[in-house]
Length: 125
Image (tube, helix red, strand yellow):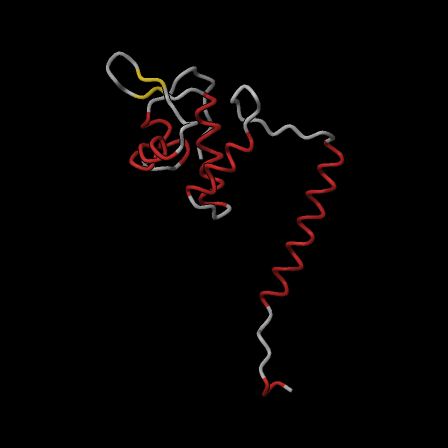
């Protein structure tokens, strides 16, 4: 993934290349996620702003990284919005949230280890 250069607007081709997401997928996500509304210039071309890139990264993470369905990702994004409609990941206490994330990671490692073991059969005794 290429980094954004700090510009105010990016074309759909630039966003597609930066995020490694095909432009037709970006078009589809616009129709599937009401929170994704890139500005259109006078010629009708999409102009993605930095907050649109953040939304796209979140959508990509939810769908492709965490396996959410479109509907599930849409609901998750709605839960993350604050009262002004902006995406928000406010954590009350960074050290507390870090401990929680460590605990979740440890639990997930245990689950993965358990799932990766060969299932036992009656013949294994």
